[in-house]
Image (cartoon, rainbow, N blue to C red):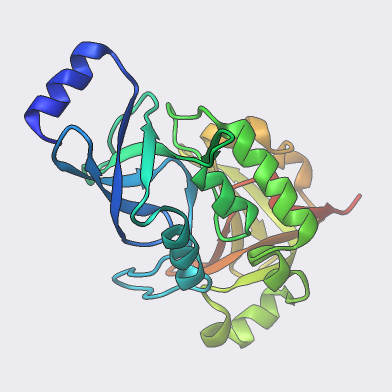
Length: 250
């Protein structure tokens, strides 16, 4: 951001800036030329879209679709960038909610991406404003089976089957049956492990109040929708939203 624009923003106490999107990097990151001068790389708050340029995983499933929708919504258009508590991420990108004017009001771009099934929530405290809009968008996408929800709905796999077809399934959105054998609370997250299959589910401690108590999942079968990632500890599915849990056996 240009120094003059930054000082004006700080003096006003405003929590939003305006500008024009000049480049779309992927589904949740853009470059904005600010009305007050200078440019900012902006990372959308509260959502995470599949990777398009990941150095290890490359282009993930639905990464190109998310980038195309984002570009169709914002490229070349004026946006209002609403900030939250933490202004920047560890890469120095501005964190903001991107708003578009549609004549009758404003549209939250990140919620539109979630509603299309091309993004999942990503809540990193202390930022959390507008989460109600994201939750509503998740419910809409899941009910209509848009995007990742539709892709995964009939891709039902057990852990054994995922391991058998891992080269073709890693990075894809699947519907998984998980027989919970162990539930562990680490300093940063809950980890729910499948029975001897080297597959686990995980979600951040900061979001534990949004999920059913995972300690009650022991010995039960869960059906979840999520993206399978392969690591040195085995397979992992990150749960970003309680809506990813489709069923929990008695």
